[in-house]
Amino acid sequence: MEPVSRGARKQTAPDTESQTSGLHGLVVRTAFGLIYAALFIGCLLLGTLPTALFVAAMSWLCCFEFFRMMRLDGKVPNELLGLTAAVLFPLSALVDPLWLTALIFLLVLTLGLWYVFSPRTRIADIAVTAFGPIYTGFMLSSIVLLRDSIDGFPGALLPIGVCASLWVSDSFAYLVGSRFGKHKMVPKISPHKSWEGFFGGLFGSVIIWLILLVTGLYRIDLAFAVITGLAVAILGVFGDLLESRIKRGVGVKDSGNLIPGHGGMLDRSDSLIFGCITAYLILKIGGVI
Image (tube, rainbow, N blue to C red):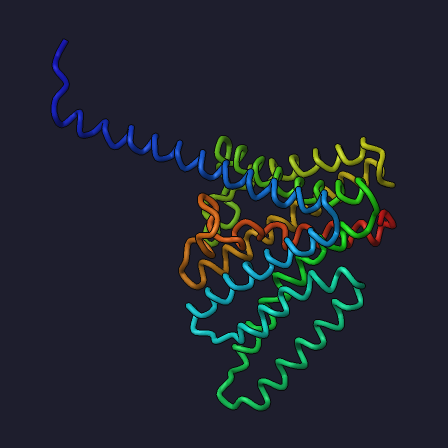
């Protein structure tokens, strides 16, 4: 047997190191993903108030990361006002959905006053200050509304199912896309997303909604479950693409580094932002909640 050359050893070492690093990254990502999901589900099971507090914290972190990215783009948001609104949106959902509308009014009114009496403030600063808390806190407050819509265990299971449909959709999209993905969706925004992964994600979301159907806890039929599963997954993908577009626009890979293996809270919540409010609106309009 010929001895392995020194050059061959140098070539094989990086491959082994890369595989080890990749495996370690997967373990870290999975572990912290499970911790996040366990905390989230635990709050949903405990009740509406713990859910609102958890979502308020999520909203604050998401909005903070959004403002950080906007500063990299030269914008100067009013962080005190924007972050306060981001926290108040989920908490106001505890009282009455009408308060969400009132809070949007107060936010726009306050921003208008700031703009009128602060000559140095640009309209772009006003725009990002308004968009930040609406994009995060207002949209995520739908999770609180879902949790508060039905009493008891069914009320906890419904938002868990909605979030699970988005998480499973994301996992199915990754698995199918990494194995069969050949046709890119929007390579200039998210180069790893494929149409094959997209349809795999739709399938994963529908599975969760079919599980909610067979529990018999909700007034939904087969067609409603399938349509809702598809709509939630599609809007979840849009939320992912929107955040990717924001990051690409300011030149960052992740919105933050809060969750090892996942990036920031906004990276972890981007699909929930649009997917959960889509589910809430469909369930509300359909008379399920």
